[in-house]
Length: 65
Image (cartoon, rainbow, N blue to C red):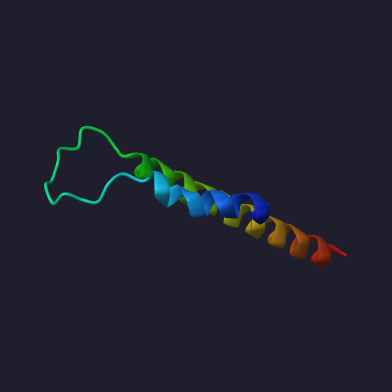
């Protein structure tokens, strides 16, 4: 999978907007990066909780045997 994702990750900066002009703008809504960070954090929490539940489920099954 990394074989397919790596070219995409390398090419993404080419599609980025121009450099910062130094003039602050107004924020009327969250940026796309805010949504991406939220999704990454939510996935991380889900992944860790799933791993911890599996770990404790396995430990509990071994303790009952």
